[in-house]
Amino acid sequence: MRLGVMCSGKGSNFENIVRTCKDHEVVLMIHNKEKCGAAKRADKLGIPHCCIKMVNEDQIIQLFKAWRVDLIVLAGWMRVLSKDFIDAFPDQIINIHPSLLPKYKGLHAIEQTFESNDTLAGCTVHMVTEELDSGRILEQSAIPIEVDDTIESLTKRIHREEYRILPLAIDRYAKS
Ligand code: GRF
Image (cartoon, rainbow, N blue to C red; front, side):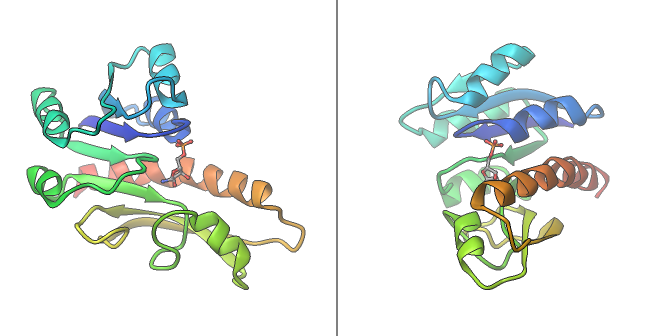
């Protein structure tokens, strides 16, 4: 598959996809902050990327159509996409979220998990629909919260699981 990736931050999942998903090709990465980690990683990896600061969804739609992407991966994209955007790529957008959905949708999911009395944290890859963090689940992984966990140690383990399940979800999507 030809993958389009959208990032707003560090881009560690983006880099992991490029390095791990050898059966697929990341053809374009869109970000919304000029000097974000994702942009630096794209330069290092030689992946075409484009910064769209005043997020202009029509422009993003045109770019992904021009690059003939089969699947769009939201890997830390921190904005809600409009119905028009989602309709432009029916059943072709997935997102990685750092919680055991349906728990803790939206922002600060890891903090919300950490402050709860839950014994399990997790991460989820799901189809993107109009309703935030609510589409069909493709992959999910539960991570026990240890008594001596800090937000940093928990975040690290969640990220490690994200690097495992996002490529799995992309493969699962490709085979479906
Ligand atoms: C990940 O934790 C992902 O679940 C969330 O944003 C974070 C992105 O991290 N949606 P990175 O930019 O891939 O390092």
